[in-house]
Image (cartoon, rainbow, N blue to C red):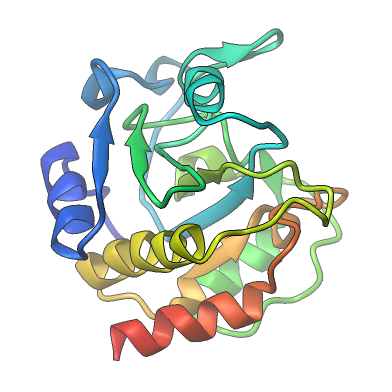
Length: 196
């Protein structure tokens, strides 16, 4: 069990990992904490945005969309490899997912299939949205993949977690496909190599 990092520690972790970070407005206090608790935290969840264009993507992830208020994550990783901080605290990114997956993340074990949605993931996960259409054809530039690796590793390093604490939305919630276009197992290998 881990208490969420302070906003400043979160920012420091990303910068210490060598990332280019862009702070969007009052990100430190922009959250959904009035809807429920945030923490304890157990891992990092990765998503794709199903959008194109960095400026618009960051705006939507910060403000939300009809029926889903922002922030939609903590950080947006754009194709150029920058991490845009849009919120901190509870964010509308994970939704309900499988409690068996949560137990595996907590125990840093191999993930079981996600076949139910009975736990509130917004409480337990840091979230990074990654700019990509998610159609299986939109490319993932090397700079972006490296930034995803670094961002996840930065949080794991601060909490003393292994790469098994990093999951994709598709591994948490039945019916989700994100992130699509790269292998989560390969990304976890990259993250673990960086942590080592």
